Length: 389
Image (cartoon, rainbow, N blue to C red; front, side, top):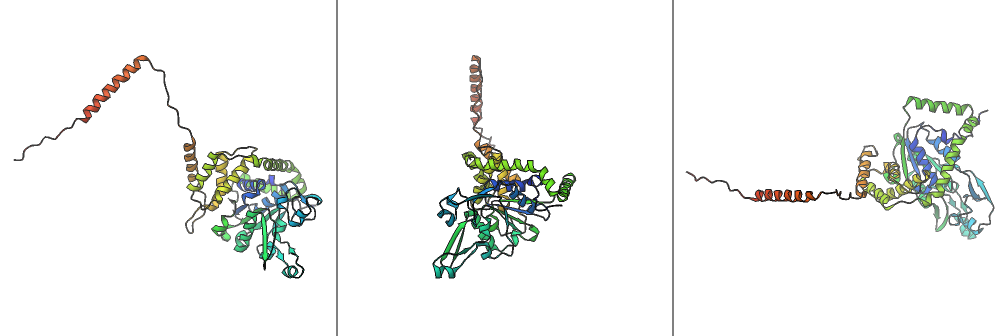
C-alpha cells in the first residue's frame, strides 16, 4: 500500500539546479536571508522545499519548549529555557516545514498577548503564533506575492533579526525566531513590491524543462515514486545521505571560510557596477559566496564563488524600467569581473635580455640618427610670398 507521508527525496529532483543550490545555501547559513523562488506552476517548488526539510539532520531541542530552543545556545533561548540554566531535559527531532496560509492575520503569525491577564495578575501570558512554531524550522510561504504586505514585512523583519517582538498596550514579549524562509510565487499572478523583494537574500527564476530526455526522466521518477514511495526513497537514500553530510560539514567549517580583501573589493565593485541600491546585496553576496565555498569543502572564497553568488543575489535587485522584466545582465556582470581581474593582476616586470657589447654602439648610433631626425623636424619653413600685382 502506498504511503505518501514518505517525502519525495531531494536527490531525486531532476534539473532546477539553481533552486536546489539556493535552498542548500540557506540550509548551511540561514542568515543569508531566505530565498524567493519565482516560477510557473508544476515546477517542483513545493516538492523541493519539503524535500529539503527531510534532507536536513535532526536538531537537538529543549524537551517541551514551544519554540524548540537549542540547549547549547543560551543567547537564542526563550526566557523560560534560560531560567532553567541548561538543566532542562533534551531531545532530538526532525526539522519541519511550517506553512503560512495567505489568509493569515498578524495575530496568527506573531502570536497574541493576553492584556487582561497581564493587568490582573502582573504576568505575561503569550499565545505563540506561526513564527514560534517556525523557530529552527523552514517557514514556507506559498504565493507570497498574494500575502498582505504588512505580514510579509513582519516575516522578513523576524527573519533578519532572528527574534519575534510582540507589543500590545505597553506589554511586550520576545522569543527566538530563527528559520529558513522560503517564498514561492507565480509571476503571472502579480509581483512583490521592490522594497519587499530586496529583503529576500536570494532569488531564483525557474521554468518547466523543455529538453525531451530530461522531461522523460522527471516523469519516470515521479511515476516510480507514486507506485511505491518507500522503495523509491530507499533507492535515493545514499544520494540524500551524501548531501546531508555535505551540509553538516559545510556548517562546521563556515566560520573558518575567509573572504580576502580582493574578493570583498570584487563584491563591492559588482554591486556598484550593477547599480543596486543599499548594502543588503553586498552582505548577502558575502554570506552566499562563503556558503558556496563551505559546501565545496573549501576555506577561501574565489571569484567563481562570487560570480555564482551574484547570480542568486542580484537578479531581484536590478533596477528596471516600468513594465519591463527584471532580469540579470550577465554581460555586465562578466565585464565587472574582467575589470576587477585586471585591477588585481600585478604589473608585468620589464624584460631584460642579454646584450652584446656592440649593442651599446648600435643603440648610440640609433639615438644620434633619431636626434638628427628630430632636429630636422624642428626646422621652420615659411611659405613663399609672391607680391600681388
